Length: 68
Image 1: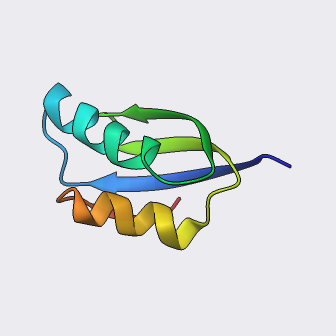
Image 2: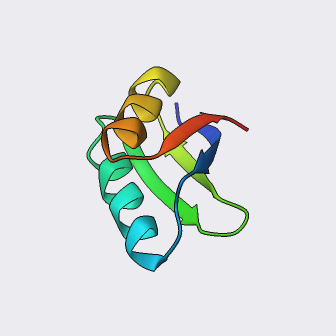
Image 3: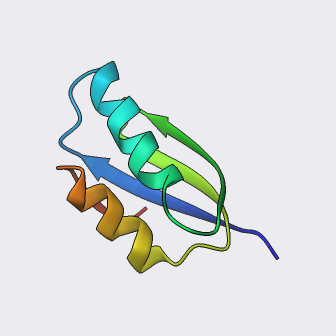
């Protein structure tokens, strides 16, 4: 079953940052789709990935993340 997870992401300042965050999230097992936005700085993820793994991926890419 696919869940929808909304993350607030801070530290992104350009489209390159959005691309980096998107790639990091897509690499997490269980992600079916992701949409990352620069303003207001967040991501909508659909899939079975855990919130912990998603936040870890975003943090590893150099940004801060938390549940929105």
